[in-house]
Amino acid sequence: MKEIVEIIPNISEAKREDVLEKIIEPLKSVQGAYLLDIKPDKSHNRTVITMIGEGEAVIEAGMILYRKAVELIDMRIHKGEHPRVGAVDVFPFVPIKNVSMEYCVELSKKLAEKVWDEFKIPVYFYEESATREERRNLPDIRKGEFEGFFEKIKDPKWYPDVGEPVVHPTAGVTVIGARMPLIAYNINLGTSSIDIANKIAKAIRHISGGFRYVRAIGVMLEERNIAQVSINMTNYKKTPLFRVMEMVKAEAERYGVPVIGSEIVGLVPEEALFDVADFYLRLENFSYDQILERKIEKTLEEKGNK
Image 1 (cartoon, rainbow, N blue to C red):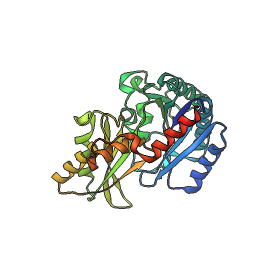
Image 2 (image 1 turned 90 degrees about the vertical axis):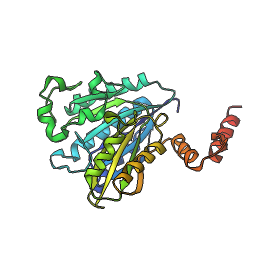
Image 3 (image 1 turned 60 degrees about the horizontal axis):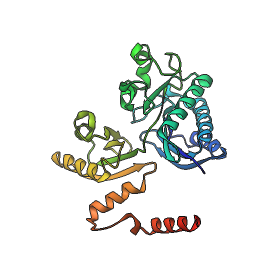
Image 4 (image 1 turned 120 degrees about the horizontal axis):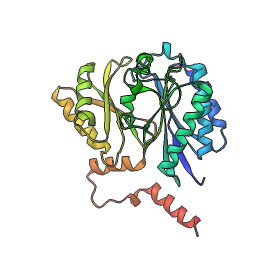
């Protein structure tokens, strides 16, 4: 594959397995696009789908996804712990190999036009595709969620970037953009207090004075009766996973609450986990090339180029 673009659409469905299957199955037949991962979260009632492919192939996959989501997801009856604005809540493009961020921005705008033309779903651009600074951050667009968007969209400040200011009655609105790789990281607390989770989230997120590349909210996992700090890490190189974990542990300790586990939603760059191992094992003079699989891959690549 000469060029590799990653797409990570988040859809507002995780509880109905038959519906998920109907949405995901057609994606497997797209020529030039490959399904890497499917991560449903029933508490959030949200599924993160990861695919890679060439530009036109991932656009085709995107249109299939929107078509099935519009057909099968009704936001009027959707309930979940995670903020959301539409059936396809957010659709990011990420440059992986031999493609620029500018190219991914072009792809995001091409998909947006197609989504509006066929489905009449208003589109907002975020991150590198944002048309104005106040729309760069996803949480700012999501404020009010699906239920509040019927009024929000009437405000000229929140007219969509593509389409008319009319919310699709069942599919809501959607957010599309290009961005760098993001890690979705959730930390579970040994408490049922959503208030404590919110206080910890406020302490670590950038907008409240925390880490520059962290967005966080507190959510309640009703099925497990525990609170969770749900985190998006937008630059794992400048704000690594271990630093966020240590900060959450320190903040939780102030309230007498233990950290009982964590999870990564979707895929994660190998380098991010290498940094975690390096930190907790206190490795000295350890290099990336000492990882067996990495060394094998590098050697085979060198042999293949001869």
